Image (cartoon, rainbow, N blue to C red; front, side, top):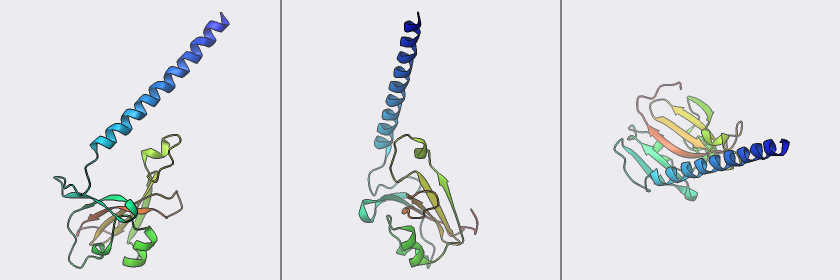
Length: 149
């Protein structure tokens, strides 16, 4: 009787892991197929581009007159960006859903936002909490950007 219960518990654990694996595989396939091709223009004015060192990212909106954002490239490190255009008015960070995927060691577990008044937002991916070594993945041009997130 005890062996039957043990077999049911082991079978339930194996089925659970298989279902989780199938769901994870389906999620990764759907995100790959839903991704727009490089330099494709979406209806919202967001352009997907390839940057330096193979980084892919998005640029949305149009730059304000005299914006320093025109000097930036997708894939630049946060240090390169701040050395080039100066310190932001505000900044913050957050964890993405990929941080909770077991054995995911990719660069998109943490995101950092830098806000520049009158120019827009810059979003970086990579590094880890407390380590601001991420790379630029999104440039959001917004001439009405405020000082705070």
